[in-house]
Length: 262
Image (cartoon, rainbow, N blue to C red; front, side, top):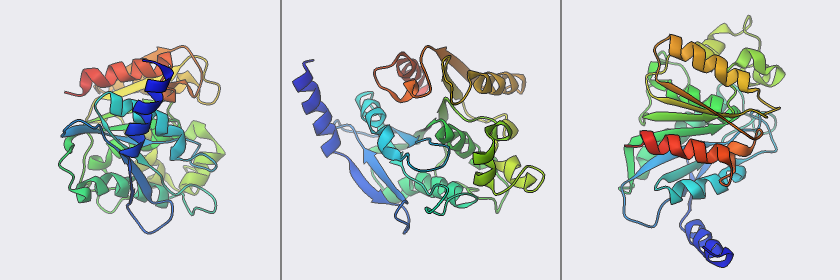
């Protein structure tokens, strides 16, 4: 495909995107990218990273969403309240992610197959994806409990899998230390939600200097010991490689998605 043709194809996919509000806060928005072919299509809920803080937004995930569309997925690119002036943290950030996922049901879009929902998260978004994957196991009254839309698989790339090791940003996210708010860590920390009841894909680059590949290895080892269905794929590259559609890391992630999508 020539560069001109590629730009036309991407432009057409972009024109098909739709902006939705799943709440009243300015950050409670999500973009829906759908294939131009008839559905129903499997749905990828896409959660961006940035250590739950500005300045990163869902815009960094748009190229990935367009590539998901190319692979036959409808991509639901979610924004959420982050730490700072957005008013995020506990429970607001988690409430937003849960509300955005459940809002798919309200769309009543017959081109979306809500029986085949995959959570796709990068970095801090990987933590949120792993948290959302365990919503069916949360106690009544907890943020995100009793989901209306349940995920079938979860793909966590360069994910923050251990909130204790994530330092001050995690303490800000949950509003305290594990001694001060132990119930929040019990609900939000992926290492404490093992085993998940759905297949988990982990993709992590060896050269990641932001989130060490050791975190995914530790998660995978613990999940396998607990009898979970987990696949760890290690690749070349750095922290952002998994969200670059041209990278080896993303091609590996897309390969895993292709294996589990049916």
